[in-house]
Image (cartoon, rainbow, N blue to C red; front, side, top):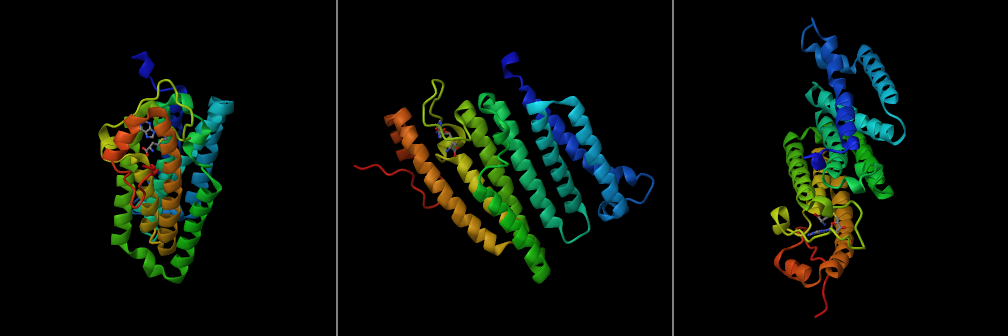
Length: 292
Ligand code: SAH
């Protein structure tokens, strides 16, 4: 059906992500005819760095020729996320002590890329550069920077703390489950899903209570909550695990209350009945309390 076709921005997002991801081919191509063990060492060497810089320059030049204005802005962001995902893969498979940081780079870049792509699929009318969630809030940026600082400082002071593979594996599982739950929620809610909580009811807005919404009222927030803590468990960052736990919990408690006031206003008894039957999904967050 023509109506179901992915919008142009969505297609550009996929193309540019894979163009950026192509960085993984740089060391592979350089290793043609050479011993395969050399592939990942190459990435960290000076020749590898030059080859990768040339790759970024050429790809960016190509995007500049292909797209103008707002479309270029989408392309360059998706390409950067693909590039960072590719570097994450190279680091993950490299024989270094940075493996778990590579997993983290893949998790973070895939999350932001897929937020834009899934929004392009389910609700193209709300699609904007903000759908990448790259500039979500000052607090979000500070949280990301803090986790990089904690990881680096602890890696220097207590290198063995960063090699607890089973802890990182638990983090990876949390990230994968959280990501799947969030994207399932977005796909289930369809055009009713929005990165900005709506205060006015759109005519087409219907209450979704099926699929993952039959298990909890806020599946996308549950997914994001465990995803964000999972990233810190993956990095074996004890301070940020606690910081993210507390900050995300507070953020979602406030957001859910604000959202539920609107939902009661939109759907009345239908929402109250749903609220009584189904929990929020987040620990110790009951949602908006009604006076009896
Ligand atoms: N809190 C939900 C949805 C987040 S998107 C979740 O975590 O999955 C935010 C938008 O979704 C808001 O504008 C809100 O009005 C809408 N929304 C939240 N729950 C909904 C539901 N069950 N059915 C339809 N719309 C919903």
